[in-house]
Image (cartoon, rainbow, N blue to C red):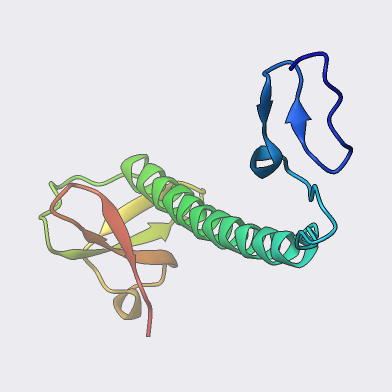
Length: 136
């Protein structure tokens, strides 16, 4: 049977000694359906756009959170390096001022009640970090 030549329209694999038309990735007869390559360009472009949008949104979110954290760090650093002669109480609002000499100090006195340069008002959280209070 190996010496016998098969017609061109019959798909016979000589190496494996079997008919394998159903296993071929292409049409093997005139009556077979046309195999067309699917154009995935539109799908790829949509997927790339969705992925880029998702990654960009996450980047913006992380960047915003990072900037918020840096600002919080700078405020806390400023307050802890300022002068104060009392132990701040958790849950209270304190006011940070700058003297003419340039050094800063923390006070209970509200900005309307003194003449020092007001840097900001801060709230001491339970976790011992200072949070800037929005001014009215």
